Amino acid sequence: MKTLINGITVICLLASVASCISTYEPSASTDDNDPLLVVEGIITDSESAYIQISQTRTLTQNADRFYVSDFYPASVEGIIRCSDGTDIQLQRAKDTAGVVTMRPVQTIRLAPEQTYTLELRIDGKSYITDPIAPMQTPEIDDVSFKYIAGSEGVRGDE
Image (cartoon, rainbow, N blue to C red):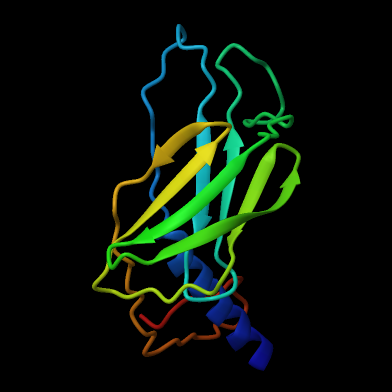
């Protein structure tokens, strides 16, 4: 029973994290043969903060992967800038199959009243995000479930 409750709690937490991802859909045409830089990650108040950088394949390349597996930039630098003037350096943590992972050199303390900007410099080219404020995650006040004999799955109380 305790395992079921823990499982439901983990699923709810994962669903709340997954819903905070912003999708960017660039305009693309079949004439456009330039790969796109992909930057994804999470910046939190914990040790799990990371940024991953990869590159898409061009529209004319056939492959089993969406990203290029030989993307290994020689130089990658990153900074998270806070609107209060604080800078947090990012360091290159690892490179695997065309994905570069960077992590902050120190724990980040996010302040809800501040905005943050990610600045990357990859092989001499600069990339800067728009400033964004941290998203506040509301406390979960109640998690419940109801067992229905003979059914598959779990449903919330109705």
